[in-house]
Image (cartoon, rainbow, N blue to C red; front, top):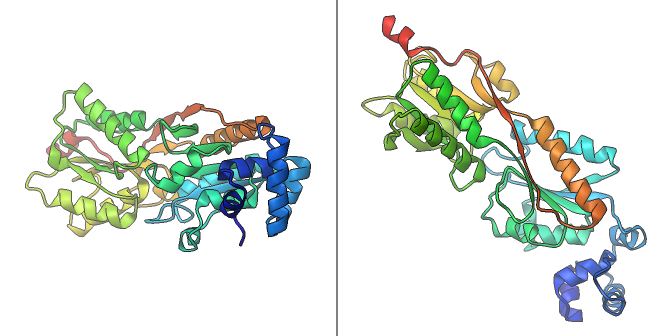
Length: 341
């Protein structure tokens, strides 16, 4: 397969210049475009998507990149809900989606190279590692891009108010009389995990509650298995927490399983709050109290930002923070009730 990098090597231009020439950007001279297009034709590079792009200046496609490991990605209901909302919005605007597969790495093809080859008009990145070099390559490219669930990137970002979500959880526990409050976090290397940790610590400090190192457990990448393992660490402590804020509903379900396996009860022995408000949260027993992310607003906001950039053919640095809310169900109870039983 002839790639953009092959054309760059042959013509002596950068891959970014080659891509702009193929997509008819105005900031590339006609002389440069001519040389690149001649080389592309000679090497048999131009697929249908690029042929269409040269005449319409659009391929009407959007590249989608997401994390797939540890139940993040297509298997996770949070991702599904966001991509469904995003898809509905951009399809109304006339766009189709092209998903990047992890198999690209096995073929030594980067996500950006794949999307440039397919001639996409823009990219959306969802639930991915902000430190991944390939993610950063896309963020720093010339293509219009929106990143969901990351903060402080060199592009447009859309994310939930995760700091406020952590505060809501701690404040609710405190209103029920809890002061031995633990946190099973998402991996702090991921923005969502780091921001929820900040919210947890901020609320604890505001309420003058102790932040105990042994009560802070890294739950990893938001899976049920990791939630169970993290909860078992808390249950092994001599003095156990009476309440646990868990950074994802899948992890919270795993945590509740661990509690039940030890012969304890939720919420009578340990209260639990999750994060996301996935559909399953309302059907587990007890029904899970959780911080709800508005996936409809997240997906639509990301779609609006990306379409605006694609229409203008330029990147925008915009930040959109979506509010969260606490959904109270059955997995929390007052510490005073426990003491009176």
